[in-house]
Length: 106
Picture (cartoon, rainbow, N blue to C red):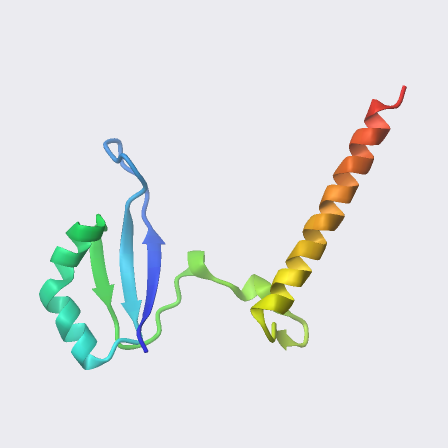
């Protein structure tokens, strides 16, 4: 099944919003042909600079999710990842509150 990814491009002087390219990878031959025919029309409709289509997997470094890999392997579910992230946020908030309380003491 084809994947859609966004590649944010450097902004130019006249850009009202950040420019981007739509990347479609793991595309079947039929998908690639269809997007080749309507690619630039699709790009203008979604205000992308271009639509790039690949049959193989394309890894975009900006979309890298390897930071969410734990020592024993990938997270088993998004719920597990979400719980760990929420726990880390709670710890950071507690540390911030402690720091602010210590600074507020005379």
